[in-house]
Length: 317
Length: 144
Ligand SMILES: [Zn+2]
Image 1: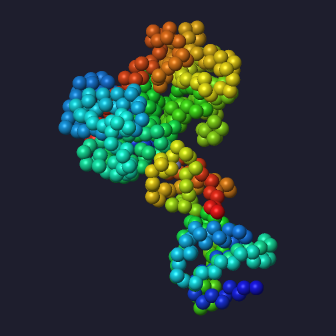
Image 2: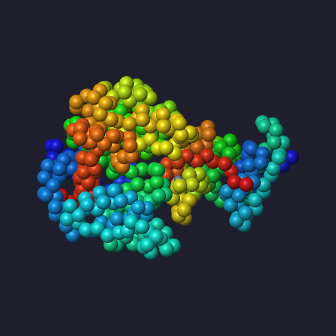
Image 3: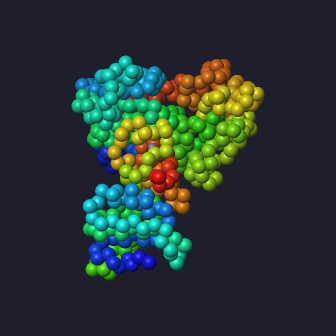
């Protein structure tokens, strides 16, 4: 019975397009994570799943980490990749509309990954090629769904599920797209509690808080006070340019730096996550702590993309 | 006073807020019609001081979304043989296509020429709509 259900789910993902995490049901997301777990258990089994398949990697702005993650994922599935990472040096931007580019690409590639500085671009691209798998690899400040999938797989793989956790989110909560998307998506699972940790200047926006279930979160400006309660600490960068004056920045930045001393107050089974790149918000002395999983997270990012690509192409187990 | 029933067959858009008539005229592209069209402005009204009114002698199909957006308080009278055969009150449309322009400067629809952008109603009182592409909010204001 369970197998029939998961087969039906897999069939339902073939040819689909991922613009934001909300495009897929919780069951569909779980089926992607299950496949990712199988790949993690034995990465070599997936080595020829996408043999003979082509991925178009369309980066209208450079993002080396995201591009490497997608391209390595496709290559580890035995598939091949073509594309660009600087539209200035390719002829792709010479007056051709994005809709036309999409249609041409769909003649060549089996799946497309698109990154673009303008918001809504991935959706526009995807609409132009119905039935072709398209993955949004970031559209301005709007959505970056595979980052969220990476975070969820990390949590699920290391803590057993996406339900019932106490998650501390620390740093710039006002502008943090990654954090907003993670909170929104984790709320589709059961029993998660959020602790928003930030200086008052960088609090979660009101409109965002108003969408959350009552009692599902608390706000604080002290990481020290709450670190002992957390299952997950999700760190993000506090950017200098967000502050009006230099003194305020200097006063606040150290409060939100995670170091060995703060880690002493945390539970032994807590995990520390960060979308990377980090600047100084996690001291390098924390890297050796087994609770620091942010480098593993990057690897999970590749595995979850392997699973996602396989599901959309309808290949693999 | 103008007698509305003088129109034989067509549509009378009544109780338009004074000054909005010209916006509706433009947004409905009534200048492109070859049928008789009358735009009346600043007509004395019992309800609200003054009002605008548009009379169209035609079978022309009205875009109710445009009307609902510019002035949800208008009344639409369908006229046949000089008599009002049906009346229609408008509400703000849940979804509009091709009328609004996204206010988000970072939205792809402000760079590419995207036909038929859909907007979805978020706040009825404030006439706020959400762009289907970037999800940013845009408030409707009639063009001048
Ligand atoms: Zn938009």
